[in-house]
Length: 552
Image (cartoon, rainbow, N blue to C red; front, side, top):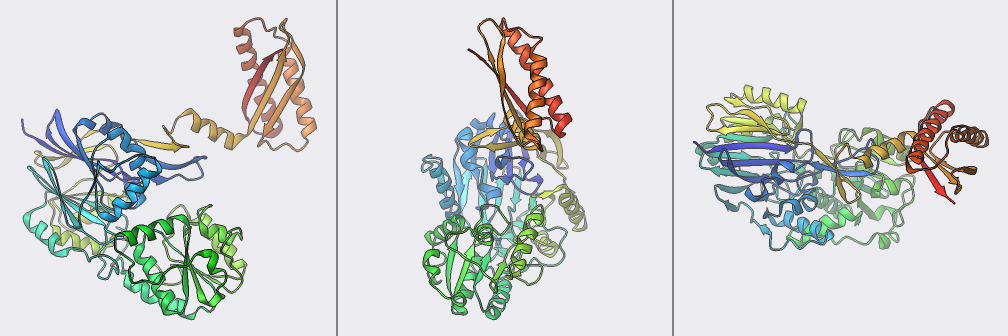
């Protein structure tokens, strides 16, 4: 029986975020596996109390004895954010370039896990041997330091996994895209390319960080008061641009927000940002005149606890903003964040602050490939098969159409859980399905989306809370008035509501005598129904209801 070469995405296909991809090779009953990336996505307001969501790794956890390692392409959260949460279930080697490794160590340090013996640092353009996989890191360009594609060589052929990338002729920090090596790989033959789909609808080239720097300098040169720049902390080239423009316009710069300090420190540790001016502490920055200071802060997506939101709400302890100042949003508006960001923009403008964003000035470029970038990659690599990932279904379907335009013989459309047989089939195809899904980080516990804690919190969020405590005498009678407590119910007349609820409770309780546990449970169920029904009639809400029986 022939060995098989398989590809299976557990996250990041049919969605943008929480990337997790598996490659398997071997006999049908005994594959060896590698995992490429292990990321998160961020929860929205529909899941109260949850911040992070990551792929369910159950399929590979069951096969962890055959998991050779986790290979990381770069340090964005949607590619590494789940590692400290899920690695304890996998206990395998981790491979990363130096900058990514620094951030990985910090994640494990926060979890009080010593990862030293399992984290292997790979030099840029270096190689990793995990028999039967030979993995070569290929330097690409993206919106973070050290982005890598992976040339994965197997006995069945070569796969190129692009990770996140673009073609930036002037990335400012880090090397240019390794076009020479990509062409060589293409000439050697590529069985399949797993490729980023994020910007497949965008025509032309995605643009260069150098062009952003030139325009940012023009914008900042005309601004006369305090300047606040908010951007993704992970974009170190944009961070260096802020430093450069501050120096060129005779200003000092101050970093605001924990993530901004963390990335700055990691970049310096890896030898980057060596020729920039030293940032000053935000507390010291308060003593500088408005025209002599630039703040670079987190919160470019309007995050409630991000520095930018706190500054705009005038609750930040160190940064004050006033009429005539300017805020530059040097970032993309991520779909789903429009509402809160426009609310933030409107509040700033209302307060007399100038707002500059990608909608008004050229202050941001994407880190993902537009159609012309994709076209170049296809011409270099010349793959026999393309599997679009890192996109919603609409992106990936469009990418399939694009691949057909580029004369790729076998474009394959996938979604999370699909298992693609790349070899030995005559034509790569989805031939099986792995269990896949999502896990929510609820506090510090991983839970399923249908877990009781999530259901209860959604119920509380939508309907409020009602608690009833009844005293039971030794002979089984109900003693005195109930003790009532409620939250989140739209009650106009509290006294009238309480009085009516007490009547309903008394009416229901009158038919019960509590002589056994079964009687208690029956009373509790009857009271829950009566209280929720009464509340629904009076308020339109059926609250999460808790009944306490206390024997005295």
